[in-house]
Length: 209
Image 1 (cartoon, one colour):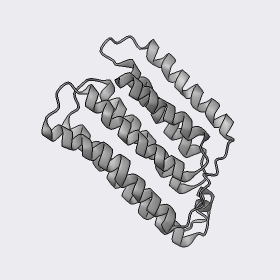
Image 2 (cartoon, one colour; image 1 turned 120 degrees about the vertical axis):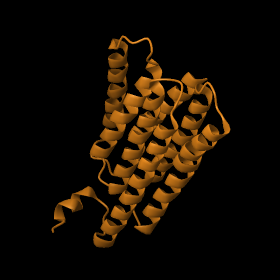
Image 3 (tube, one colour; image 1 turned 90 degrees about the horizontal axis):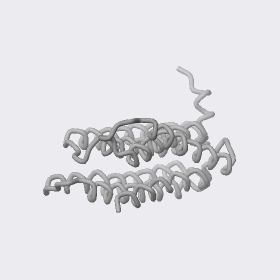
Image 4 (tube, one colour; image 1 turned 60 degrees about the vertical axis):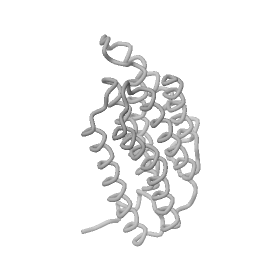
């Protein structure tokens, strides 16, 4: 069951590569949060009440509800157009994303470590590199935030790749990191929106001291 959920998570990366609407990216992030919840739920050997509450807050409440609503508010607040405006065509993005996944599979198979859960490692690295690629190839600043969140989801999966138990410190650290990052980037986007009419990274070259 865990493998099916991880493969579904991997498929969302391909969907991101071909999507044109910003709201679609937000929905995909929400779906990824739900998938991560069930992955952790089935993966952990022992779940106590505190663990369950922490997992619910980090995945369902934060990743699937709070962050998508906050991003939707930023889009509405700054009157951002629905198109993502990528630098490369969707077909090229799909090929590059596929190449990233294939490369991570080859890299993971080259690692000889019986303690490493390879499918977790593949999904984690694919999310990290796809998120980075997403940031590089999108014009709008808000889409850069979404790319960063995909990277954060990759870090979350990576924490599961090294074992079946997640420490509370790692969970809280990831959640606080996401919260602070989205809050700071949200304020940054709002400030840019008050300065420029178009929310494009090209406008950052016009900023002066």
